[in-house]
Amino acid sequence: MNKSASLRTFRHLLALPQPLRQRTFSILNRPPPNYPGHVPLTLAERGALAVGSAFGSLRNPHRHDLIAALGEATAKPYFISRLRTAMLANPTGRRILRDRPRITSQTMSLEKLRQLPESTVGRAYAAWLDREGVTPDTRDQVRYIDDPEEAYVMQRYRETHDFTHAITGLPVIIEGELAVKAFEFANTLLPMTALSLVAVVRLKAAERKRFFETYLPWAVGNGLKAEEVINVYWEEELETDVEVLRARLGIEIPPDLREIRKTLRDKNKAAKAARDARERLGAATGV
Amino acid sequence: MASLLPRATKRLRLSPPSGFVCHDCRRAFGSSVCQSQQQQPAPSQHVSQSEKTTHFGFETVAEELKASRVRTVFSSVAANYDTMNDLMSLGIHRLWKDHFVRSLNPGIRPASTASSPQATPGQTILDIAGGTGDIALRLLDHATTINHDPRTNVIISDINPEMLAEGRKRFATSPYYSTSTNRRVSFLEANAEDLSAIVSNSIDLYTVAFGIRNFTHKQVALQEAFRVLKPGGVFACLEFTPRLSNPLMNGIYKRWSFGAIPLIGQVVAADRESYQYLVESIERFPSQSEFAGMIEEAGFMVPGGERGVEGELESGWEDLSLGIAAIHKGVKPVSR
Image (cartoon, rainbow over all chains, first blue to last red; front, side, top):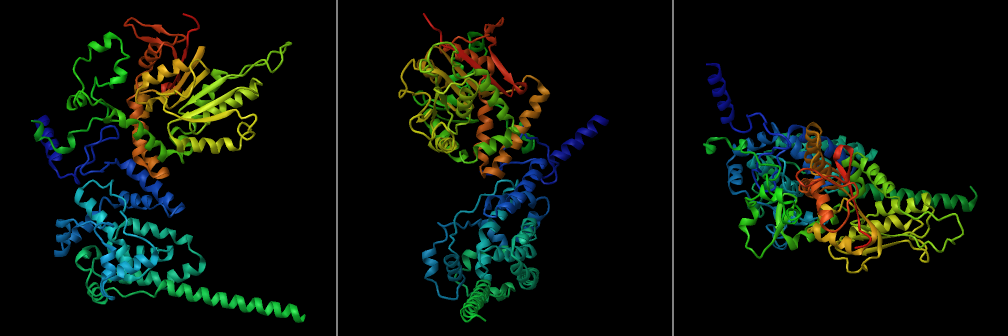
């Protein structure tokens, strides 16, 4: 009686969908990959990857692959599933999950985007890429998320990050990236976006002040208020007017960061030049 | 019945199916081993007779592609090579290399009697797959400092130009390279299976540290080693072993290899795949006794080699760190 009961329980457990079943593999006995490039990790490996990539990307913020790995290592158990559920709850999100479009330099032709009318999303995107000097080059492939659909959600989030930059106008410098990450945390709730805010310690004092006074309140307020940006089918919105899209999503544009920095830099340069001139004059007249 | 099992329980076998040995390694086995492996390994059944394949880690690749795949791996690891070695072996690789060089005792101690210092010509050492130069530097330091031999010189050879560039960087600040009159180290980009740039019977000591497991045809490399060495010359190889003899330590070691090392590769060098290849290539390397057999087959005499009841060598190598690495030596016989 006991043996058959425990066998029944065992079979019940094995029949549960994978997210609910306890992880039953070890380093030397990995299950086959669920999609090309998939690397199943044990809990210990995932923890070590999270810690290692967190410190590695703090030391060297140019290591985008570590930021990507941090995102994947910390997305389970709850957060990426919540994001996928949010996509499934929305008709456009469902279409995106069915079509699984990818954004690469091949699928997004910058030549065509530059020719679109001035106020469109596509033109804003191309203009932003040109202004910042970046390309929609292939983002790192998702490798450490087990479910193929959740892996696609993470890939989609990664590839649409630049669109978020484009419609908010925030630049690629660390200040701008932190503002976008704060917005994304309020909007998508992915832990990596919150963890990357630790990079605030790398900002200069004036930048930090600006961040806490202006951009963080903007990011949190707008991120919470706005619609889920992951549900925007960007490929279909390229010819939409940017203002219309922002109004539909409920996003206000923040103060132009590059302009603020430029004004401040020019002011400082002028003040310094005036000071130098006064000193020279003082030295010349012996005052 | 198997189809009723949930997918996750069909495990991917991490170790190769029992009995699979690559074409090159199989030739070295004695007859007793051959008989137990009558069933052909799966990969060769799918390719035509003309296309020969070999292992690249756990992948099967065409033979002519392996060298370029290896070259690509080492191009990407070259820059962080030394940092990664320290992290993967927790610094122990330095102890292994120090012991390796010390046990070889390179350099000829000048006799205190009348013969002039000019008479002793110094040794010519060939360091294979030694791109970054860590073994070559140790060899020259030992010869110069301990044996007071200022004439021993080292030829560093590697298939990969990026690794050689790292070696040149290392030697640029050393006394062995700076003056062109007394340059004691030279760099040679070559495949160890084809050392036609080196004259036969001209090398006193041939060393290869952690390189031979990457060679496509190990037996050919061993034969080239035999050709270039002088009679009485020494072949020395420091290499990882595929498993430890203690099962508990082996379990821990394998989990470190397959779990931690690719992870460190991802975090430090942004390259999980190359380090996955490295640990898989260790798994595919022949055991100490099989490799000692291959050394003997190339014509070397293996010092301390004793055969057991089944005809395979039971000794003739030195295990390091519980058998994680091993030093193999062979001597080219002097006369026929």
